[in-house]
Length: 409
Image: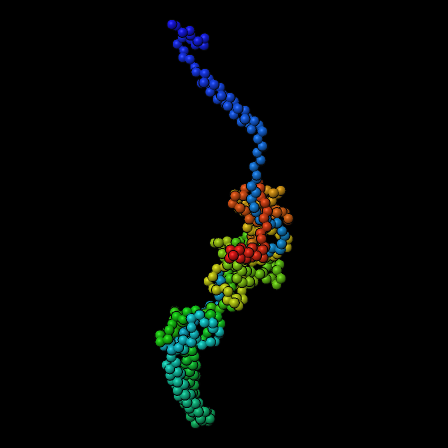
């Protein structure tokens, strides 16, 4: 018996089960629902908040007027106003050294003692010789005096009287020469005691007791430097020499203040005054030599040291200044960041000089401009900034104390 074919089937095509058709329909419906739900969420989601601008915290300061000196700067060397190499003027054995290395000495103070016995013997010999020669001179003078009246009466020949006169003159000259030997021996004996020719500080003692000292030896016994006062010798270029001379001519009593400062830290070591300007420029270097004198009562300056020299020509009472740390250096010269409406804007400057932590500005800023006191590494021209005020020392101390007490608990 032959079964009838289904209407939906065709020869050669397998029949699809009804359960499979229902599964496909459910899947399509779920997919449509997901797409509709996602579209609705996308259309109704809350708007995204705009990105917050990150502001850089910076300290600020203001351009202010202050009295700033107009100065010339150089580097100078300290020299002793007087320096003496002490040498012996008489030969002999060194018996005593009465000072130690580095002692402070005064003029006339005894420093060394030589063996004085040979010198004393020479003096005694000269004195004995003078006594003999003086006696001969006195005897010749007496003989001449006796012959004088006899020669006047021609009881003796003129030749005898002339011989008596010449003998008296000769013996007197010999006695006088012997007298000078006594003076020389006394001077030589005085040389056995060597004293300080100037007041100052002694260096290292170069000869020890027991050594034979030669007169006027090339090796000094000690070197004494006068340290109160001292002088600072420095040079200035030709372009500044005229400024120096004009300022010195206009200064009261023609005196200019000079400071000696540490070359690295710029710490002031001493204050003196300009005392000398050379009368000619050095043709080879194109500089002029000058000297400043310092009382150096505390001996802060030492011969041979080098210091930065700051010469004050006059004082500018209304100079526009900013802290030195606020000034940056770029390819186009110095600049600062000026605070304008919450942004840091680069501003080129003309800096005349920098002194004592302040830069004197002659162009680019006006009084009252707010500038960044220090520049963070991530700051750029136009960066958004927020001003921070450094905490007061008392507040910092209280905060530190509170933190430490909290940690202790």
